[in-house]
Length: 173
Image (cartoon, rainbow, N blue to C red):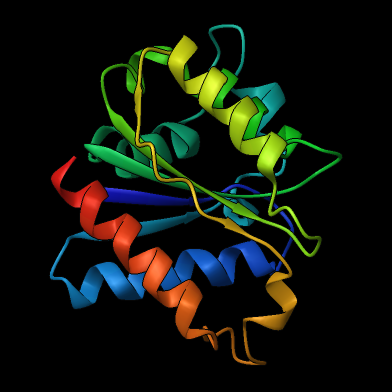
């Protein structure tokens, strides 16, 4: 199972739409996958699931999205030159043991021109610290608002080819 994480808690985000594009492409390849949208996290997850404390709803989410996954795809928007703090908070609550030795693919999303380049570097360092294996192909989807249509469908053949190439390599990684 591959868990695709939309790494922002912003409701109706472009990032969630890109995660859905990834999910659809994986489904076309008959690869089991699921999308974890951080907008669905309990609003108080950080304060209720930190420093050894944990709630039952959070534990259930972690069983579904982390325990059952052997690989992750993290789709991350650019927030202030990096990745969203809510994603870091989630990782802090989950802990490294649920991530260690698993494989991770990264995707940067931004309305600007560099597609969250620095955020991909920061996430790579985070996952290496947690002893996960990060796949080398890391698409940086820049000017994302120009390549998705109003329904969240990818409307750019070059980007589609980049994503499909990344997924084919990541499946065998």
